[in-house]
Length: 347
Image (cartoon, rainbow, N blue to C red; front, top):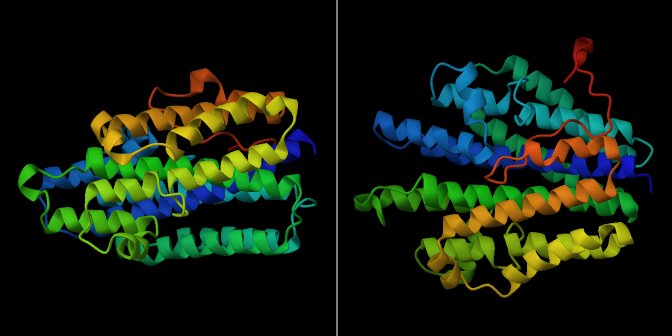
């Protein structure tokens, strides 16, 4: 399989997963913004998604203040933000267009229709109230694309790299979503265990489609240590870090080849930490510190995958100089594509 083709498949899946996870994160923020709070608390909450994605400085350079309207637009429809939902779908489509012969017609039609509807939604968007239904639509389109992919594509190397991109991105996003609640949105002492705290934990669980699963497993009040256990260590929870590393290690083993030895070693090491980890030990270390370390390790793994499996020209997208210390994967250029925007401009 050509490394350029593998890169397109990998990044197409990552961008679609990134769009879905951004919609999940913004939906929880949008719902929490409806709760009564002081102006200072409101600013702190809307700083959270910017901190999660590492785009706070970029946002502040272009927008006058941190508020719901500005942050929602920046992270949803802003074409100058490479991590926005709009740009993620655009880049997923461009990668798909470059490998039309390697994916099924149903996959292309699903993704292209999503892009066309996305442009229409951006043009017709008028109010913050419209974001809730829009985020649900993004999630549905991502689910549709993933379902079409699993139902139509040949189980070859293209399929393996598609899955690899999905789970690398999902692991990164789950860690960030959990960290923002526990560390950045941690309520004041008088609110711990109160209605606001409970609502935030429920919103977090719903943002990763885990609320019903939590109730089924624990059958008790929502406790932070149990939420963390479910999203970090539960291997049967589809969006947990453990489940993502199960998939990543399995895929890298299936791809095999001498070039991927170091990637498999890093994946195996990270998987072992999750497989044999205990939540009380993680909390004793500090959940924020644990998640920060995880983000650095998953970024290092992603860099290794990029460097060993994809073409040399794409390695610049994950060079050490492009990675901030918190382990954030910056939105890279479209891997191997001709990233022409409408009107001929460069992305």
